[in-house]
Image (cartoon, rainbow, N blue to C red; front, side, top):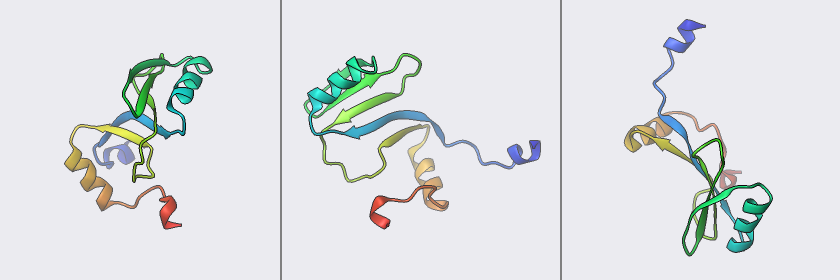
Length: 100
């Protein structure tokens, strides 16, 4: 088991920074997450609201933006170039909805 751990590449992804959820009604969605799940509003702008959970600094971000990416999870990394290179060099562990 120790040899398997020693042969792994260094971690590029440090943590989940936020999960982006596109919604039709920004105010209704923020109200839902605040009042049903007890999340607290951390910040907001015209097209998004960041909501916090008590045991992590990762955020749920409800938004109305028309983003091109199917990937709604955003990771915190130390070096963006290293993370991009790692992503490009390996097989993607997820499939884009567009590729099906």
